[in-house]
Image 1: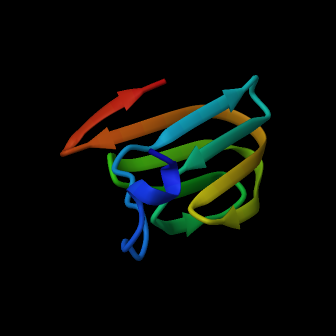
Image 2: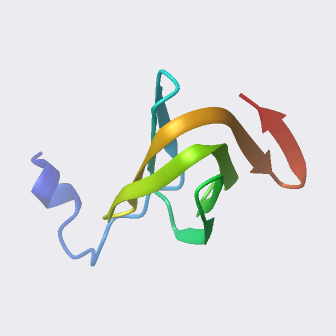
Length: 90
């Protein structure tokens, strides 16, 4: 069976998990982002199906927001993932 046959008749596919890729301390890519709550040079807060993601640092810039993918560049100092009221630091 081909992939297009599996999705035939569906308006869109919905993915419920986010993928976060961290490259050193200079770049974070979040896939399946649903909303950007806050965006400034020191903090960017995003909503994903899994919860909220807060990125802290210096000179932060969102250089891409397409198809639910957000790319954040700058000097990243911390990444917080909040899931159902709890916070996990990465």
